[in-house]
Image 1: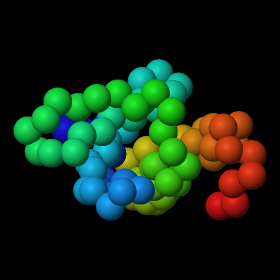
Image 2: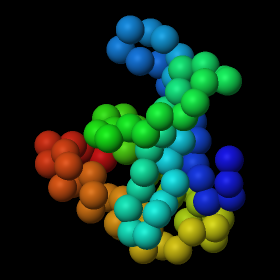
Image 3: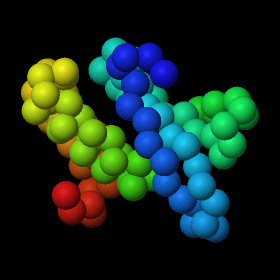
Length: 89
């Protein structure tokens, strides 16, 4: 993982563990996932709301530690509002 990437683990709807990471490219975030350690990372074209909220939490923590600019949290929130207008966060 590169310095600018944020990663986490979660379970799928079927209960299988999955590793997810996101990195910023320009002004957007790109998500990747894999189910096993030595599998290839695959791009996730439409990340679920859970992944976006996890990313938002991680970005907010990094902003507090001054590792990311404060505007980045606002950009992620705006993207979530556009993709998931019914989301409450």
